[in-house]
Image (cartoon, rainbow, N blue to C red; front, side):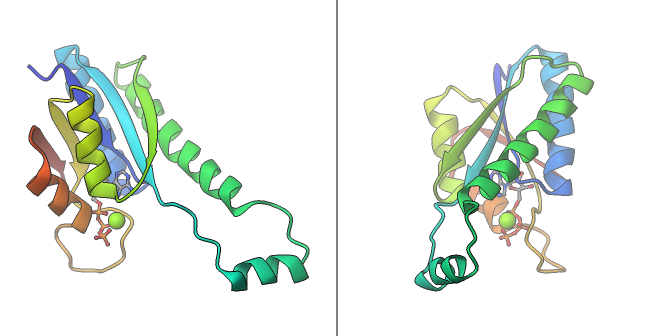
Length: 147
Ligand SMILES: Nc1ncnc2c1ncn2[C@@H]1O[C@H](COP(=O)(O)OP(=O)(O)OP(=O)(O)O)[C@@H](O)[C@H]1O
Ligand SMILES: [Mg+2]
């Protein structure tokens, strides 16, 4: 049961809780565990390019985005190590978050997706984020939403 668990992480507190639950489950069941973060294609507008030019900004915004992604995934991996899964994998994909999570699960023999009920979005009062809602609707395998 649950041979390959996929935990979707976005750097939010909710996702961190999901990472702990996914790790505890994987440790108990002896499942493979993968953490996945989906990033956006970075679109630099002409305004931003112009601003960077006149301000002589040389650092790449892509670099900042990559650093953030690395931090999100290493935080999740730390949780896995702490909760008894030393060999969790980490993956990064680009695209629309929910569809990309579901597609990854289908292509990689994932039989359980674990995710938070909310994420980084700041609409207060919302019980369920749009990514959780879509993943729960589209996924063909079992899903566990952590509150
Ligand atoms: N880009 C992402 N990559 C990986 N997992 C994600 C991503 N975005 C959200 N998730 C997963 O989905 C869970 C719910 O996040 P969601 O984005 O649905 O909520 P929200 O940010 O509060 O709402 P919304 O994005 O609709 O404003 C997160 O806890 C995380 O597990
Ligand atoms: Mg979100």
